[in-house]
Length: 468
Picture (cartoon, rainbow, N blue to C red):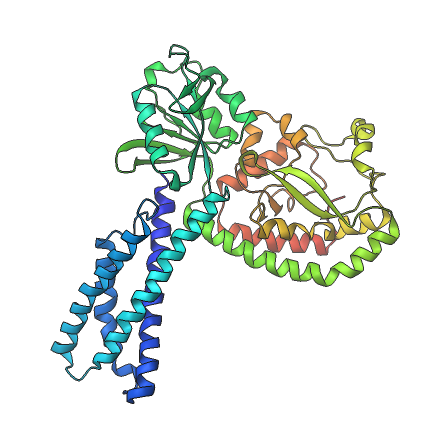
């Protein structure tokens, strides 16, 4: 499970280790050079032809490029010492054979600095990951289907490796399985026929089927339904053929074969690049927000009573609730007046929007026309609750009215802008059409698509096609 994420993280770890190794060498050269008057650094760089392959082989041999979460820190550091002892022998041998005049002090200082920098890196990695998980972040909520021996083995494996960040939300049983209140300490949430409703009412990232196909109800194609809802489906056995989803057959912890159906096309490497773009964009956006804030704050306060910022609870990735921030563009009693205006709703389906909304202030109309009201959402993006490009975050009452296939639009982080916003944002009046555009974005995502949408968003705002 999470094979692609692990592969990408390992590559990133290798890159960080190589940077630490190179930095250790240059630090050693700088200190030795100032004391011993060494030759120009180009004279010594050939040693990297030995160091980098040797360190990679040794680090890989001592299992630094698989998960360190289950290994004690003392064991990690001891393995690192072994790497440098063996590596030191290899380097010393290479120096003796190739260039006996090579500075021994340079080699010794390099080994010391390399051990220190790599040790600090691995220690920081373990502490940071442990802290992140202790704060409740970077977890995947798993719903397990089945209560037999195979399901219990899977549950026990996750319990033994809590550091993996896979949290069991609960267990669901088949109709003919024993009616237990809990399975190995995890609550039984109901039977299989309640699966869809359970996913609608809880934050579920993945559903894992630990049951043979012959025991499932043929009348319900649950993987198909869940995929439409935007929930990742994993199976212990290959029992379904789901052509519309991205599929991956892998071994969980090298032990249990699992077939995964992904509702979205993103992989770990792409998600990392998207997050980098989000961080860079949010920092730039917050700088702009800081510059514009004094003028906008004064205008909002002069125009009407109420706070400068408006925070509203919205639904994020797979049902996560967060507070979405905007500059206030409506009167302070806007939320309480919404019920009076429901009959004027111009949207068909699970969304609310009207033209010439009487709740919008004079300054608010300008803010919405120019999209300046959304500047505070760069803070949501920096926090990781939103992305620059995605699907617009719905309110909880809108999600309650979603059909199952609508829920796929919330299987990713919501965005400041998106495909439907640049496809006639104030002309589309059918929510189904919005959902189809969002799902099209999810299933065809690429970093280049995000960049094109961002450029198109700027164009839409400049020519005055903002939301009303």
